Image (cartoon, rainbow, N blue to C red; front, side):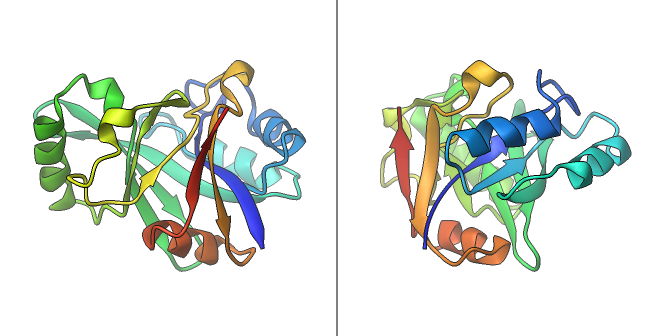
Length: 182
């Protein structure tokens, strides 16, 4: 089954402008099949989980968190939970303003802390071609990292996978998807 999704969305549970329901409605209106709420780790979580659970949509909705990791500066790692699978993605490589060699060093350091499964090669939905290289030995995903309605729909992944959380996360881990951009 062909699925379209975004694995990096922010809501009013952290620094996004839209509620979880408004985020879901906006993505569903654009034909998405799945999204992941990945609000920041430094905001209270209980109210977020309640708001996520209250969301009504036909899409598959992942609960995730954007972790702030300090490794020679701050880095962001999305932890996205399926039913049994968990996906760890190092986010927005282009935002760190580092050369490729330094990004590779940071990836190696973070991989000692978290089981990295993929990297995000977009910055706010804009493609960063400099990270689409074999030296980065992880699946490379495109995502919006949306914080506003304007940020929704710039970049996404598509895959031919079963319509379940774990099937989607396994497809990403296995690099069995493709990136799409506006």
